[in-house]
Image 1 (tube, rainbow, N blue to C red):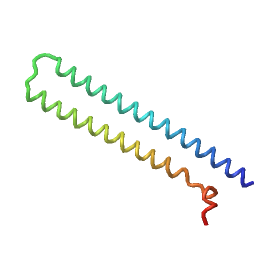
Image 2: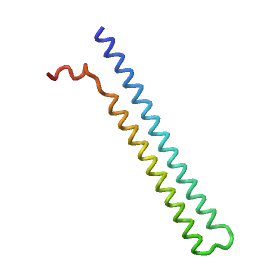
Image 3: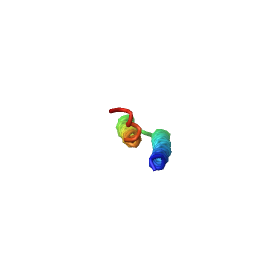
Length: 99
């Protein structure tokens, strides 16, 4: 019976580890794709017609602020996934040797 519980917890931990790896890859993909879209938008804006320097600088600052916010949000979600992954390893049976 004890082996059954231990085996069950191992499979739960493995499932959580697989899900967290998938979540990390998904977050990385979303952040990179948003960065590429932002750079493309800035390039398209700069290429279009006559642009005053102040408008270009102001809009570029807004885009870069958005970019930094997106990267920060991605890192925050990544950290939450890491925390959840760390808590999944709490197994009382693994600490049985410590008394």
